[in-house]
Amino acid sequence: MALVKKGSRLITVDGITYRWRVRGRPTYAQALCENPLAVAVEQVDCKGRVLLVGMPQDHPSNWFGGPAVPVLPSAVAAIVRKALAEGWQPTQPGTAFHTTAPVGQ
Image (cartoon, rainbow, N blue to C red; front, side, top):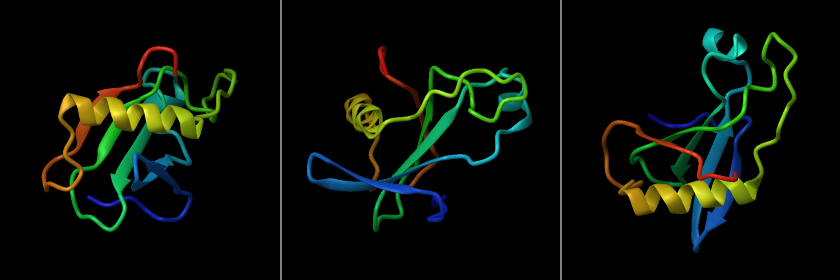
């Protein structure tokens, strides 16, 4: 599984470049604030595992007009470091690796 380049951003964490993206339109469950905002991350130029992260905020386009909290690059860097510590291997093939954002992000 690879991320769509359109709407994605690049970030370098500890010398390695990653691509990250927030889904532009919410899923039905995200629109109802039943599921949190999700961020997908992958290592650039590598067909390995994608990291899927559940964030502690609602999708900005939810149907209830909840406050939009931006996903900052510093939060993405902390997420990548946490996932690597949990065993995410972005260069190895396989299914998506799921985690949640660190506390305070």
